[in-house]
Length: 310
Image 1: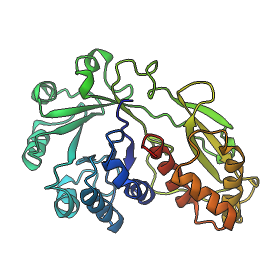
Image 2 (image 1 turned 120 degrees about the vertical axis):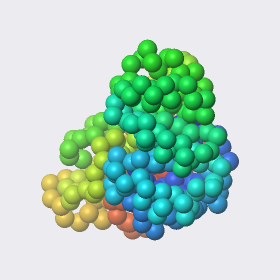
Image 3 (image 1 turned 90 degrees about the vertical axis):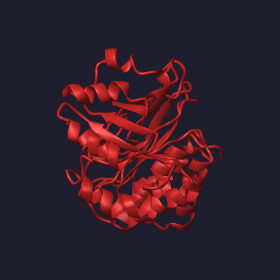
């Protein structure tokens, strides 16, 4: 199976989900997370240090589009990267490029991160000729990471398949949790039919590409559970929704309702023996809810575990 590149913003539960699996990810070539750091708090520092300690390979975006470091790459470098992973061989720095990327940004990137291997995320094709020349000729750019629909297929196919990573937002995000369907198609990039060239691929997991600082009150609680389709080898996502959906009262009780509704179906949703599934079972037995953020953490963790040896 081609390597899976989950694109995750460095928010608390996203980072903790990866941190909890960092040892297993380090032992496998199946998952290579891409992290966009959005703040410099203790969770971010602790997660990066743990990735380093475990020897986990991952990509770190050094010019984020979101959060407190957007437009402030120098502070990200000084406050987060230098104290943690700058001298770490297994992390690959990623520069996001678009139509307006300047040669000065490229030169800064090359100077600050002299690692042999780097990566580029294409938010659009660069229009500055020397920047375009750099992305097309620098052999040290090992991963060319393409956001779906941002660059022509003509250019994408010029990049060797071994260096290509295709990122698509597979999560059909709804404004209200109560509006999710019972089950939906998620992706077939994990299959030979959906990914005949066997290129690296990724998504924004069960969060989606749209960035938000936090969520509002939950009228309905939802668990988004990725699993193998019952109609083939591709992946589907099932949505387990709380029974009560019309007020914002008793969120802990609704969490347990959503967990129980997931567990009523999970026996037929493969794989169903991940550590996240076992945590859902414990929550159901004890009736103890640990909040909406924890549910998101478990759903991301389960999604990552699909691709890791059990």
